[in-house]
Figure 1 (spheres, helix red, strand yellow):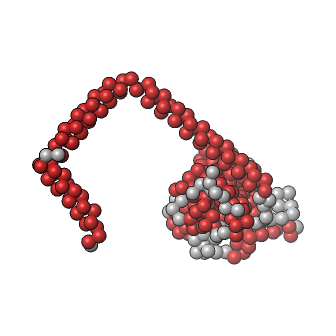
Figure 2: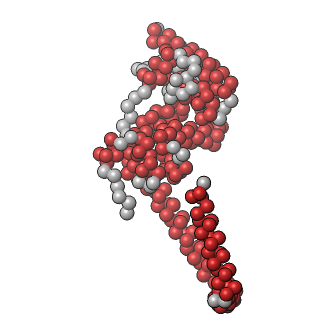
Figure 3: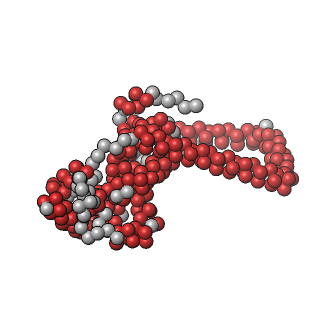
Length: 110
Length: 187
């Protein structure tokens, strides 16, 4: 309710309210929403196509670099696997495992 | 395909529950919200624009905007107020975009309501059209929507003092115009 309310004026506003037929309005609004939905879907499809095209066109340039990275990761993981079978590697792995367990249990203690 | 809530259950559900379904992408639920709120939004915009076709266009624009951004609705229980704010923004954008045309149309209005303008029933919209857009907005939100001065100040992004003076001035002007209407009918 407004702070200073002229009841006579409020009565005029009340009288001016008229029931509005909602069916045609509802149908037209839902049609516009449907159009907006299709437009959004179209925009997303176009964006996806552009993204795929950009990735595909950039692929040849990126591929050699990616291959070097993958090879490096493979060599590193092989070296890491060999290290983990040594006593020092085993101790380090166990220490990391204990640290992870302690971290996981920490919130439960408080 | 998302499971749909049957229409009769939607009709009997609370607005907050329907708004939650709409927020999760249920189009039938959004349709139900349009069905429930269309009359209030159209009435509000008719008071503000005095043009039924334009009011319906702006109302539809508001509902489409609401559909696009319903995921940003913070509280499902506040759907009605949120939608009203969207409708007000639509109207304010329209006023800003058509400032010149609106000013010209308002300048062409006669100073007092004429017999033809108010022939059968009180043409409140004709009287409201004689108020400046900001004043009209404050008066309509106070008297048509029953909002407090503070709520109007927040919705219309106007200082509280300005809102109070707009309402006092607007209500006074409306009373004068409606008295003129009474004189015309008394003749």
